[in-house]
Image 1 (cartoon, protein in one colour):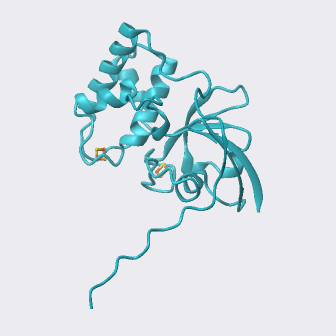
Image 2 (cartoon, protein in one colour; image 1 turned 90 degrees about the vertical axis):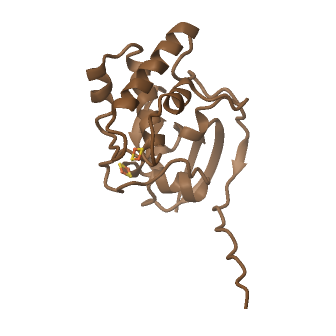
Length: 193
Ligand code: FES
Ligand code: FES
């Protein structure tokens, strides 16, 4: 087992994990962050995209099925569950996806939103082509992408109008160290005789 100390959505966790554990499964199975989903497990679809800090401390989009949990040691990670403010107000990108109908089944949406936020961090006013390139690592089988592009534009406009930064510079809330036993599966439902 290997020790990993990582701050996820503003909360610091210290855990022992198998060295082969992928970050996406650490997030889902150990921390219960099931908003981050697995679409392909082969780093193709982007559904598992989260933000992870690099050596420079800046968080960038990564496909969490292509990162080992131990590689997140000492880093910060933001999942789609950590985007909304502590008061529950949705991030402008989350709101825009909702308002512009940027999703249908919603399976790609967590990763698509995280990729879009990272795109807007780098380029606050992207063109259509730049948006399509920015989300090119994320596959959507439902929408045809048009409303996703529209949503990213709408979020960019709102953030420019309100002076909102795409991401916080540092986790702003609840830095308490959490003990994180593995998430227990729900008890099986009772079956009537
Ligand atoms: Fe990670 Fe598809 S599940 S890229
Ligand atoms: Fe269904 Fe994108 S909304 S895969």
